Image (tube, rainbow, N blue to C red; front, top):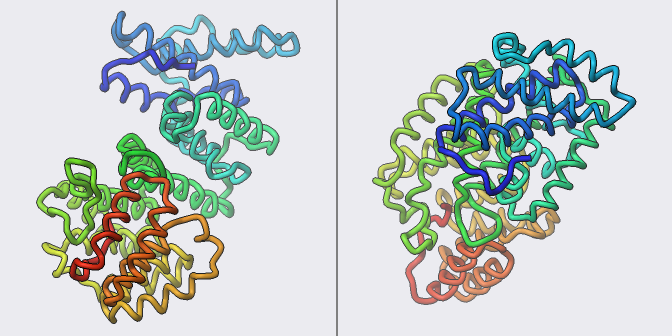
Length: 425
């Protein structure tokens, strides 16, 4: 596998990330055995990381990687006497492995799409889907995936190994899902990318508010999926949502890392190019097909981005969109956000009443979000003592150091500060 100690230029890193899923898809389509092919692809990436910085990028880099990976497969099979016949067939099929013979050996985009569906197989847990997608489709090493999720490399290696074993046991095939299964399977893929982006945008633990490696990879994979499925409106909606949300990244924290609430952000620091791209994508998408939750969330994000100031935010329209979202994709997280919008339109008590419906929802038992939103609305309602206690409870429930500091600071200020604007960031 690729080593932590190996490093190379960003352009070469980007090239390998683009080529990795193409090479793996070609290997799996030709030879089957996703787990062995994925290991072979990682060996090829390691070889490239060691050789290319010294010898230069080959004229046909995909063919080079495919040749090296195929040789690695033959080596894997050579150690297993039961697979000698397959080894010979693979060696004959490969001929001499020259770049000229392999340069067009199956790099179809439909193969990459099938690979993405395979990594997001419903037999896997969400954490395994994320890990396998980052490694097989994102081209990250096990060490890089482990660093992304703040776990030891050995732990991540075991997780990825179990995921590949589970795919094998489930009898998953390297083919696109049949038409009747495709919408549901695509929904899983979109959810995996959505989770990846959210974890990067607001890290659930650690010292950093934002994990740029995760949000960048989520956006890159969403772009890839949009290129493969340009007619899927929810794919376009998810990419637009990521762009419109990530556009605010630079203004979300002070130089010292302290969180800046959305209403207090310097909007001149927002990424206007990302906003324009997200808005254009959303404009082309809305009305072109069924409207799903990602398109609705993207429309909400666009309304926030379009407001020149916090006071100019079109909260009635945002509330109307949350009303639609609650019908399309009901859930406690949607209710939390809808409560904030309801409070901005009809007053904090209306929002607090809606929050009360979540008090017995076990899905929020292990998150600080409910108490954080409650504290914000209590502050707006003019109940500083209750807000103070809710802020403290929320601070104790999060493993994110920036959020702990932000909530503790709000708890300290709430008794003397005037009611704050919306605390979404």
